[in-house]
Length: 386
Image (cartoon, rainbow, N blue to C red):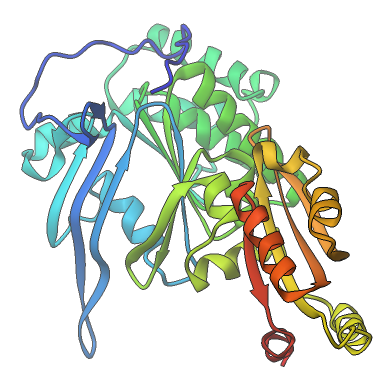
């Protein structure tokens, strides 16, 4: 577990055990800030019950940025609203900061929700209130006096870069600035958890990057646990530590972002990653593969390989070693190199040719060096273009 630095904006009080508080563990000895156990959410639809969430188990540790990604209708929004019990699950436990929210009465639940801030896709600002007043709204509703509100809100506006716009109204600021107001408002009650429900999907790419940088800054400086709901893998790549992929109400894959990017196990994950690392090869590359296969020595074999790598393996001269040690030819056809959280990762499509036994040895050598190797058929690639 990483220890975070806590600033004056977010003192993290040490609470004693309160009503509904239990021990929540992601694994033996690891405390979970958010622990979802066996979550099922069933709605009554016009043609009968609809299962929006199906037996979800998630464990999110303090101080991490955790991404939940899926396509439209996968259950992302239903899941994030379970975390603060805006949606009460049909079955399961929702444990936040060691307290099972499903066991609290109304007054206890209202108090517990102060530990959970939320940033919305469409800002939800009141048009008749200024930037300052929108950010101060939760504190006014909690009965805090004006001096205390000023002392709390002014540093938050400074944190989100809006001090100079405190007296403006929502109609007078940009979409990115409106979302910064939403973040300041979510932080006003000094939560331990910040939920972001598609907070950047209505913004342009440059503004999206600035908002994600702000969320990462909030995470680092205030020690908040951040849960990001998104359908964009670029968002996950930029800011998340770990990610869970949701499909049809189930978590189908989860892990460190770098691991999920380089070793996706599910078809839905591969399709989401495609916007960052395209899985389909261009038609011109496939034509070149056919040409290489037609020129093969009859005694040799040829294989189209996709190589995925991360970390130290990205800097090793693995391909040149294979050529020297195994006497195989390697034609680099297509590729991309990028970075996640200061860790290099990438993907290469290569056509490897040589004696069949030597070729198998070269593939084994790649795998031993930490490279994920997938054999690709031209026919399968052609089908993906149809």
